[in-house]
Image 1 (cartoon, helix red, strand yellow):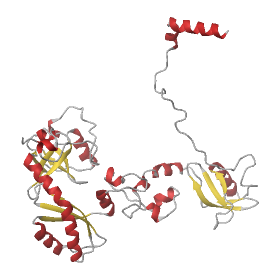
Image 2 (cartoon, rainbow, N blue to C red):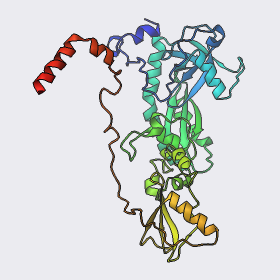
Image 3 (cartoon, helix red, strand yellow):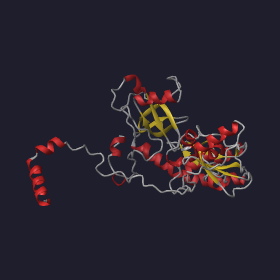
Image 4 (cartoon, rainbow, N blue to C red):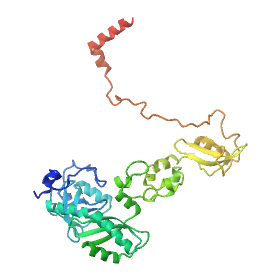
Length: 383
């Protein structure tokens, strides 16, 4: 029982090993193969994408012409020794991925896929993964003893247990040459240090956000886009660091999700920094409700007392009159109601369970003698 497919077909109790059956969707680096029904091209089977722990991926050459599928555990070339990973992308999709990432690797630059992982390879791989937690805690104590201003957030062992990657975060440059010597003597493996950001650390550790759901960086976000306070200003959010910051102490990534919707809605809005001139008062902008299309003004530029709500169209009309050097009689029109009350709406109130059913053919109903008979009976009973 040396083939990986035999192991995947059995449970952990039968093989004496943990269950390594591939479960699509359980890893955020999974890619949906939307080109799987296209015929295979022999030239594109040479390069495959392999994923490892967390967000580490790489492209490898299938020099032995193995029939690889998404989810297969394979042994690949590493420096030194070999590593164990899962196939995350094959076929046409690899070419699309290379084009999207703007990567054109030469055949000699890519490392090789040795074979499908055997039972011995997987057993050593599982043993290496069990050492990661204890190694991380021990390395943290060693860095504290050396008084280094850094935090080791995660450890990843190579599949053959000959190398370990230590992921750390630091606010400034750290001289960890002494730390590498101590770690090498302590764990008897080759040491590699990789610096990551606070967002990447939160994605590796995971957790529950203020929305009650699992962190986006731990479920689906792989490329982190910079978030600034401008994103919050476009959405009319109060600049409260306690509410806008996530568990990584940075601005929440979800501020990017609805930004385009708010920017698109405000493109046709009139400028806010222009006060409105009326015969009875001068109104100054205070706040905006984007999706309701309401501008809120007050007569005092430094106070929010006596707020007046004006729709976007009315603000545009007043500014057009002011640009001509004139003042409007009143900010509010007489025939308009300015009592703005939030109205809750049921988005599914007009939907029914049969809304997707095909319409009934009336001509067929008329040809049905049973329906005609029932219709006559109902007409007589009503009379």
